[in-house]
Amino acid sequence: MAIERTLSIIKPDGVEKNVVGNILNRFESASLKIVVLKMVHLSKKEAEGFYAVHKDRPFFEELTTFMSRGPVVITVLEGEDAINKNRTIMGATNPAEADEGTIRKDFAKDVGENSVHGSDGPDTAKVEIGYFFAETELVN
Ligand code: ADP
Ligand code: MG
Image (cartoon, rainbow, N blue to C red; front, side, top):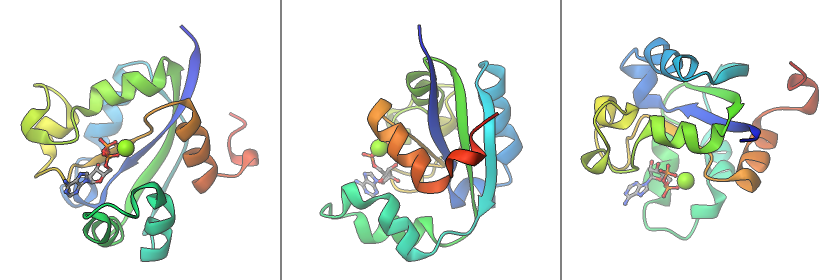
């Protein structure tokens, strides 16, 4: 299987719950390597830009307000099958449907405040990584 890169975000609820280290440990334990990492407080506009693909969805306002309410931890993860592997570790969007032992099962409150973001495919991974990081930061 190919070595891939994917974008991960620990959302404001995850930072508020003080589980940043717990979540990063899950990635490392699954052999996903942290290529680059930063903690930032997104503006509403930055959150809107990141989630532009959802701009016509009814939850867009709620989502972008939530994503800009406090700091987030953004990482690029690298490893075999990283995109799907990360999605498996995250669990289903709605924690009520997430498998046991997944991040969302363990920490998410509901379908909105669901603790983590992960790219859903190679094309979105590339765009999302480029949204937050310059090429020069990705040379590890
Ligand atoms: P995922 O993050 O699992 O890829 P989506 O791309 O479908 O899920 O949605 C992006 C984010 O929008 C979700 O992670 C969640 O924070 C929010 N969201 C999705 N569906 C809803 C909903 N029905 N109500 C509120 N927020 C939602
Ligand atoms: Mg998505």
